[in-house]
Length: 321
Image (cartoon, rainbow, N blue to C red; front, side, top):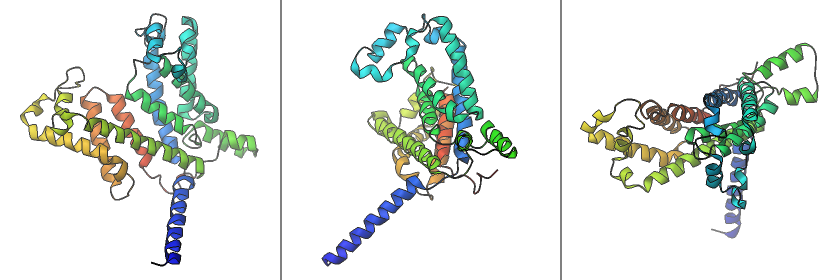
């Protein structure tokens, strides 16, 4: 191949790649789906805070199960490496903790229903982060999933539709009002680049979770010999109902184990092509429904199903009032 032809081929490949990269990140997208995810994850987060309120002192009070000394030692709070996990909840008296938690519930509920989401979104995420840093040692997957979802949703106009903000905007426009401040505070539900970026970040983060989850599983012997699923369903600590009858069907247990491992490892590659995406998402529903219904982790299982919804395409012109 001549040097000129090779150069043209490389240039064409480069320009095509740049175009696809630009289209992937910066194509305006409807906030319709993100608005629904805002409501769902808002409910999840509100539920989490209400659970904390059921025994707040035992979770983060002065007499908490994980005491302040233990919590600080887990975070290595006094070392430079632990500064990222700082939280002011260490130093609040009991009355202030309750006042703070009531404020947190009010802000979270406001973000859930879409009230002034330009402010309540970032504030909801920040308050949740403060709780996560205090609750180190008492967290599990559900807490991380809803926190990262809120983090990305706050970057987009997720309150522009299916929200109180949308209702307020319509009333404002009926009165003939128009200003840049209102347009920013109560954004129009139209396709925008920030909605696409938030969606892509959600999608990529989910791919990273599954990839490293699968790689971690692949390091264990039980995932290769087909017994890992049995150890999960036979663990009395996590059982929602008795599934040990599957012991009579070792082939089924082995097949479920291998299928789960294969699905997690291949998720990052197969979720993007449109032809394989429905199968991957259907597997996500089956896997996480099983976790939710049989392993006593309903909140985590349903939160992961909701997170997978970020790969769904919103209906055409769904952003219109």
